[in-house]
Image 1 (cartoon, rainbow over the protein chains, first blue to last red):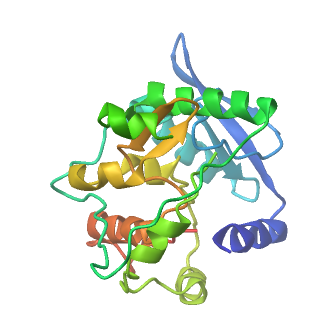
Image 2 (cartoon, helix red, strand yellow):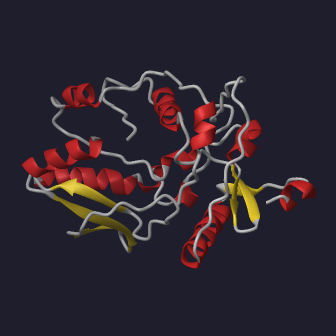
Amino acid sequence: MARKCYKSRLKNCRGTYAVTIQPGEQGWIAEVDISNERRPGPAEEIREREKFKLDTSLCKELEDKIVNIISENMNTSAWSSTDMPEIDQDFLCHHLTMDEKVKLVVQRRRKFNEEKHLAIREETQKLFVAGDIREILYPECWRMSY
Amino acid sequence: MSVDFTDLNKACPKDSYPLPSINSLVDNASGCRLLNFLDAFSGYNQIRMHPKDESKTTFIAGIVSYCYKVMPFGLKNVRVTYQRLMDRILSPMLGRNVQAYVN
């Protein structure tokens, strides 16, 4: 919904273009290019770093100002998942509140074909490397019952 | 990839923290001369699960069982938790020159 509003607002302008900031000989160099929009997926690394979009309806003066400010403060934004420190658990973490009256259920194990199996392995490996998941060990008798 | 948390979600009561209405956010922002959009990159994954609750998110992939250390997609109430985080971080600016919306 927010994205829709954003898009519809952009329609009223002449459009946006992407600006890539790269370290040059004399400070940061802003590189402008018109590219198609695509959002990176959760476990996907953003390859094109240091890229942001500017409204083309801005006047030149303001545009230069904004580019300058962003260039000077490159370090304040996280450009990839490795730039992001975790949120302190004491500040906020996600609790699961459970209804005590709920009965335990055994979820059926789903069967996947070879292709999907490989994809799952790949995706879980990505999450594992990113540190989003960890292996959990249950007593052997538990594992055997699968 | 997302894990089927249907059964777990059924056992969790809904978190009734108020979520902002998109219409009022857009209305509030409409008078501004300059708009800047920031999009969080895999935002949910930046929030840790409570260590005690990690094991509840266990899933099996192949012959290995894993559990989530961070907030996974597909879990109930995660949107609310994210909104809570945004509200806490941005509290001095929220509604004044910043609006936060979780899609």
